[in-house]
Image (cartoon, rainbow, N blue to C red; front, side, top):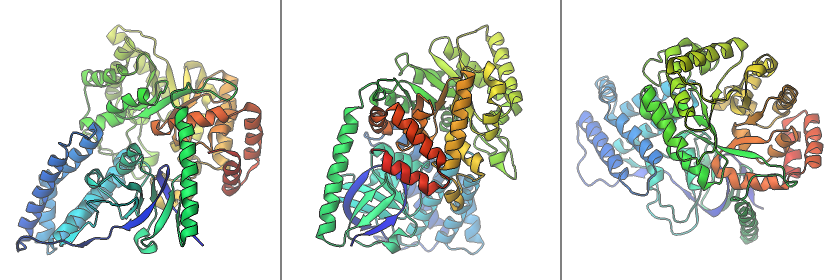
Length: 558
């Protein structure tokens, strides 16, 4: 009988192959080991930097991939990092121990930041430090240079450079021991279309045999005989047929089975990603995470630079809408000027609270957006608005900017509904809003009081649960009564099992991960209103997460 392992999916899809377990092993040395630990560290850092610079020259890399390599290279070149490692060596540590300690300290500082993008950068840094320490201790990473058969790669984790170097021919799927759906490696894996699971202790629990990796269900099933393998092949063939059906819908307008149109936009965070709107036949950009542009710049861009970045995105959209969310930084030191230290940053000075506390920064961004709105169809989206007073403050700044620029373009204003307070106070703000957009990632976090970046409480942060479905139902009914257009842009918008519930609630506007477009369009074409309402009624009657998931798995065609 086949053996099934449950895991956490960070890149969707189905894959069949032989498990290849990557365990570190001794390196073959071509030269004697330098007895001076500082010289060894310096030489290894230089070697790593040169390798990253060379790798970044590959013509097949995207700009985002080059940016990740450049971020690693700049860290490895940082004199303060070198000094910190040397200080540990002077204190009696070996070269590899010193590297591991310093990189772990750097990683911990990032992981404690409120901003998820920066927190996940901490995992990149930790992984980079482990690799450096392994090489200094004479151990190699154990990654294959060539794959001769369809393979499921099992590895503790991967740096961006290691993933880029991996042979992609016959690489069908990946199992990691560490990872998160929002970290840089996950983004690279999704972009490459490689199904991926995260399974702690995978290298000790798994063995070299054939397996079926189902990242849609979060399962890895190992074959114990030829019968299992034949069944896996049939399952993969059926999945590929479904995938072909999904892809056949990609170029079609998004609409339900009864012909009701649905607006589908893209969630993006860079100029480069704007091209995905056309590639995936989407209706525009439903969420531009502007803080990602800032982080790519490495500093606070001035008004002219922000305008230039936004314009470079708008120019690629052929007149379709661009929804720009104002910066969603938290209580961290991501950029110069953000020297906020708080006991609980998740509940601290983040997003619009930070913008109102540092109004000149927010006004600079608003000015760039107002200028852009004179030329292109732009919408302004305000994150983490919980109180009417916060909305009042931003609208006052926006009016000041328009007066200072002598510009008054059409610029619809909306808020991100990300806290229970925003749900409760929507009626007090609706008259001054043109739309609202639900950020289910944060709404779930604050609904459950569970930090979504804390792996130890991940069971308490379900994206699909009776509590969140009931809260969204309440919100959608309220928005309808207020005649306020409501969209959804969190991870839940890209979840096919949630789609019929959201449609039954009345939502007809979603901003999604572009790679899920074909599947979402296919699911839309299966939706009928009467069936959706019946399913929603059953879902609202569920009291336990397991009952809701069983209902949706049984009723939703994938």
